[in-house]
Image (cartoon, rainbow, N blue to C red; front, side, top):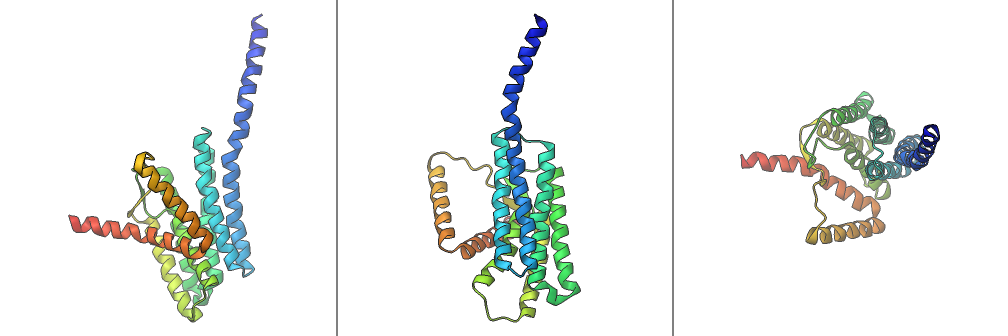
Length: 250
């Protein structure tokens, strides 16, 4: 009788855990989607399709934003998922933006161009390693998050592919070299950025958040490269401006 009970218990337990195994795959599939998008961005850049490459990085951002939330909602967080996510981020938000920008204009600067691309990639790796090993205030990110840095860099590429400006390739390469060093430095800095994880969706706050989200989608639908780059640029400068404001208050 005990043996029969054990078998029934095992059968019930397997039925309960079966969906969990399927659910466990969801966040990892999203992480794989982000990794694929980053890889595809590099391939597109090698073919000279820079607008497509930039869009692929933004798609990777969406998948990356969803995988962690899906893991928390389904209670399928794991050490494997965290490490896999970091490796995916290194490709999608480190190597992909660096290689896209290098293929686009940085190659005109020779060694300085690929050094800028490498500095950005190495800064992304350091930023991810620090995020995985250091506990921090959930209200803030320490250093510019690598998806935001990637969005800032490829946002410039996308914007200038849609709205080209009359500037020489060497001057554009010089400006992008500075942007790469700036983004990389901000990633490994101790400048704090708001994470908005402490935002309470209650009362009037939830109303304004919904309005902001609606305006965001309308703006992206009307002019995605301009709206996305503008938002990324504002977020990038918000950290140094906030640090300067707090320094002056001392």
